[in-house]
Length: 167
Image (tube, rainbow, N blue to C red; front, top):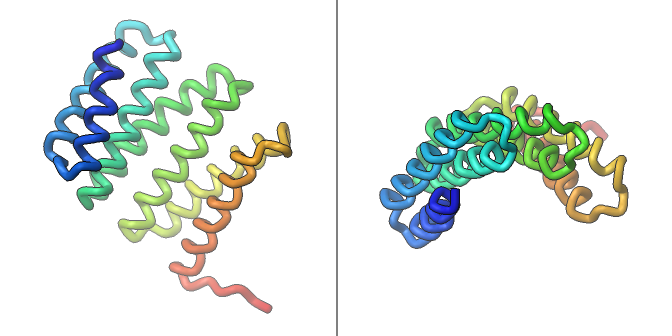
């Protein structure tokens, strides 16, 4: 597992420094290693979480490369992994937050590709999770900020769709 975790920051650093091919290669290795671990030990939440994170990082790198279709696939895989985690332990707020982020990532990738309705659906799913989290802990500033960001995204998507606020 340490090796898998080691490839994640290497891939991220390569991507941010402009070596997209190297970043994608490292992150694909990380995804494959994490997938292998989750197949061998499907009940281990650490491996499942690492798999979700590896997919998310690969998706982010692909967005920087403007490969939005592949990024969407990675974000959907990350969301599927984290949804599995959050279903096993619904009280785990970290996994719930990761699920919200996953929905937001999928929504962003859909919006970039012109699927505004899909983006709205995903953003509303993210908002539902974040609203539930903030109801449990209204003083959590991070969750409050995430709610605001998702509301901004929803507003952007509605505007892109042509919806206008009525005064």
